[in-house]
Amino acid sequence: MTIEWSVVAGLLYTEIAVTILLLVPWIKPKIWRTIFKSRIGQVIGQYAKRSALIMGALLFMLFVDALRLTRKYSLINDQMQGTGTAAADAVVHAHLFHSERNEYITGFSLLLFLVISRIVKIIHRMSDCESSAESALRQAHDTSKSMTESQGEKEKKKVMKRELEGELSLTRAERDNLLNHSNVLQKEYDELLTKLKKHQI
Image (cartoon, rainbow, N blue to C red; front, side, top):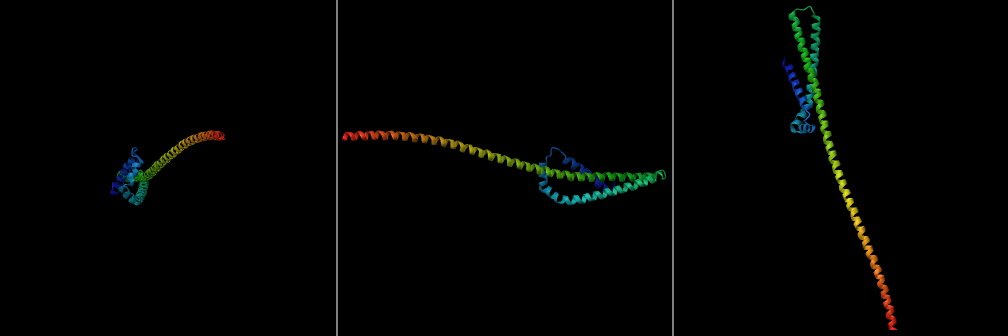
């Protein structure tokens, strides 16, 4: 295996490990969000878009090249059926095997590259949705708390109003009693005045 295909195979193994790590269920999107928002994650994110495009283009070119070589050696193999020597046949089969292996390696690398980029976008969306849901829950909790506080204040106002109305009715009753008492006293005073006038005459 040449150096370029060894690098592609190493990339494939790395992509498999990253995919498994991203799909681990007990690492929540919140944790991934903190990792992506960290300094290292932001530094990697700055260069990730450019390098991802370059890597995707390279993988695509290598995949097309591997397809071309596979087709080429398949045609040579078909043409040599029963006409070539065993050594030539073995060489063609070896080249065909290597080109097919390279085709599978680059094809799976390209596929996992696309899968990883999609998983990362989904994790970002999930973490954004979770954070917005948490803020909405917090806001709803604060609103319900303020509403219960305002309802409590309304209840207090109602109780105070009832107390004031009770005090007002008591005051009115006392006023009526005082008026009745003053009327009785006025009558008695008038009677005393009339008696006094009679005695003076």
